Image (cartoon, rainbow, N blue to C red; front, side, top):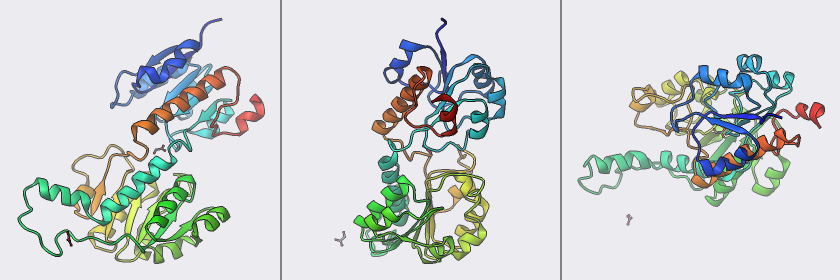
Length: 329
Ligand code: GLV
Ligand code: GLV
C-alpha cells in the first residue's frame, strides 16, 4: 500500500510534526511568514490525503472539487470561516480545528489589548521612544479606568467566558450577548445576559469574540457604533469582517466612541497606510490572539493528532463537521 500524503501549508518546526513522518509522506510549504500560493495549495490538494492549513488559506469548493482522496483538513485555528464546511461534508472530508487549547491564551491577549487600549500603553511607549517625554504632568497620556467598569462580551463561547473570569478579577460588571443563554456562566461568573442593543448601550468595553458567519458579518455597523456610549472602547479579537471597518473608522474619527483595540482585520495583513493607523485612539496588532509559544505548539500537536486519527480510521479529537461521523463512525 502506498503511504498517504500530507501537505502542510506553512513551514512548521520539524519536531512538532515528527509523528506525521511515521505514517505518511509529508510535504511542507517552505516559508514561515509568507502564505502558500493558491496554485500550489490547489495542486497539493489533488493528491493529498490530509491538509494541515492556516486561517489565511481559503479551503473552498475549488479545493474540494480538485481533490481526489482528501480525508481530513486540520486547520491551525479555532475559527474555520476560511473553510466551506458544508462542501467538505458533502465530499466526506473531516474538518478539524483547535478549540480549548487556545482559550486561556486568547483571553489573556484580549484582556491585554483591552488594557493597552484603555490605558494608552502603546501610545505611551511610542511617546517615550520618540523622545517626547520632557516632564511628568498630571494628565499626560491619561486613559480610562478598567476596574469597576462594565464589560459587554459579544460571543460567549469558551474564550468569552475566560475573558469574563479575568474581568471579574478587575471587579467589572459582566454583560454578555450570545445566540443561546449560558446559565452556567451566569451562575459561575455573575454574568448578565442581555440583548445586543442593551449590551451596546450599557457597556464601557464592548468585546467582540463571536465567530464570523453569515449572521455575524458586519454585526458591528454604523448603527451599532451609534448605540454605544461616547466613552466606549471597542475590542475585536474575533474576525475582522464581523465589523464594518468603514463604520468603525467613522465612529472613531468623529469621536462617537472613544477608542478601539483590534487584533483582526477584514483583509490581513493590513498595510502601514491603513486608515486605522492614522488614528491615535486605535491599537492595531497582527492577529496574535493565540500566539504564545506554548499554545501554538499545542495547536500544531492537536492538528497532527487529528490527522493521524482520521488517517487511521479513528474519530478526531476536535471535529467541526459532526455529520462526518455518521458516515465514518
Ligand atoms: C485565530 O484567530 C483562531 O481562530 O484560532
Ligand atoms: C505616580 O506615580 C504616583 O506616585 O502617584
